[in-house]
Image 1 (cartoon, rainbow, N blue to C red):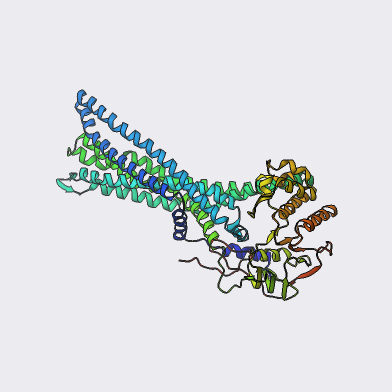
Image 2 (cartoon, rainbow, N blue to C red):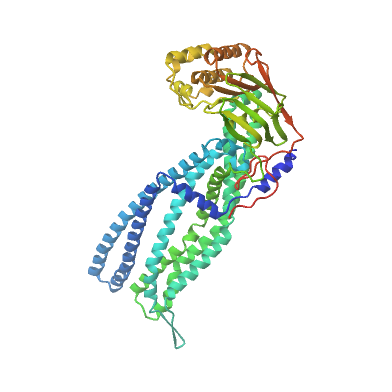
Length: 607
């Protein structure tokens, strides 16, 4: 039997276990490895690496320029001063060109990385039946649009900025550690007649200073990972509520439900603001650490080198050169401090995108002990159900007859009591819900057309809608007009090449009539309908049945519904029943989510 709603929701919350960082990085790497833009990304990455190396070389030259420039100032040597200004202009011009090139490459890498990630997520999401199964996979299947559009874009921007920044800091560190070591090799401290030389003194000071700051920053900033993840979830819920209100403005106005809708939106906005408030508090706590170190850094290198300067072992120009090298090394080492907020944001966004992709990959995977309906093909062209039981949260949905065979051309009415699971049975035949037991034998070489209760029309011209999606030769305009007239939609004959959102332009009956007109134009051998005929009024139903009789006389039609139709059109009847005493067969969870209803037992992520 089904769990109590409250305990079931609690179980779902407790059972969902996010994948590890290693799993998340691995799945993004697989996505990029299979992307059509991977070569472009690789060449751009090599290009920006070359630019950063060249920039680092220019920075070393600029640092060496400090000594003769400040020494010229100390000597009040105007000729040397002017010469050093010309040297500076040459170095700065080269660095300017390199900086602009780096900015352009950075933007292009962002663009290509987003293209690669979003195309991969769309491809994974649009695999057969994946989107449907993910929608039933618990929290991970909520708001997939945000994960593919907003989160993928944000991850691309953060990954590019943080990756380029880390690479630049590493190369600068390698470039200036040697310079700073050499500059501080002659530092000798004189204390009470004693002389103490520390090889690489300023290098060790920079590492100690930046290491302490990094450790404190991580300690204070680590909560931002979970806080950012929670904020994105709350933002998605608010956006979903706004979209839902926008799509139901007519019903809300007629029901005078504006107050309720506003209250719901205000509650969702409150959760977003609460999440943002917690993030801002954590950021302020982090600012105490980073800003304190920022101010200390203004004088830290001078304080470190001042004992040697005041002892007379280095000139003023040498001091400024050492300070510049220290600042470069320390700037490289404090990359983590400067980006702790961005790293936490990147980690939270990576978790959302990677867990979504992992769920897409694993949503078809079942636990070994769970049963699955077997599918096969019948060489004689019939459709068979053998001991079929469809798993549901509160038992099994099945046909009253254990063994059923439907031959080509038959018209069969499949009925059942409310709550018997007629739609679940329809989804099982279509392969959308494969959990259960028994066998479904499909006619060999035939692909049945499935007609759901709510038809789907792609955005495009009416001609494209009617040609979608079975890929046979398109019908002529005369044939399309004739079929539209037979279902009462002759007014649309003049709109075949007009692009529109047809689900908004047409009424409910007109949408269903258009769906059956599309079906007739495709001339399938097998049609399986899920309650789509039940909602028609009398005249519309008679028109559609008459059109089917005329256009697809040899087609086998299975109509799953309430059985209120003409028995002459559906001479054979079958019955769906619900066996509530049978054990509920529940599909296994994926790592990043759970197929509803989730089991209570926690499953650890794969290593």
